[in-house]
Image (cartoon, rainbow, N blue to C red; front, top):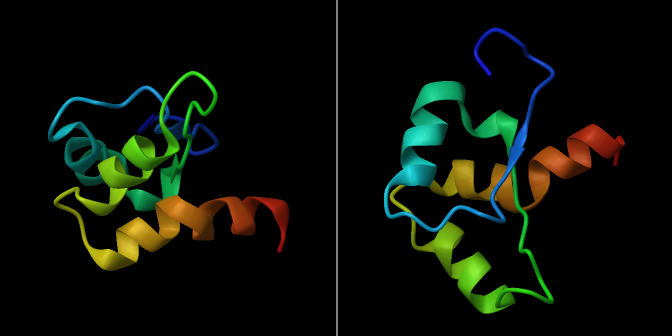
Length: 74
């Protein structure tokens, strides 16, 4: 991801404690988009994974809404 600025990742399969923090530290919160995996996985668990992570509130806002809005031009 560091070599290709146009590559982003979603969070739907992230479950390991600390994985989101590691990802944000390595490539930045601007490159991460919230993904719930909903219907297969719990929406509450997917949201909790983000909101309970050890990242800044600004990073959480980007991941949960800001990045996808930016990409869609909203």
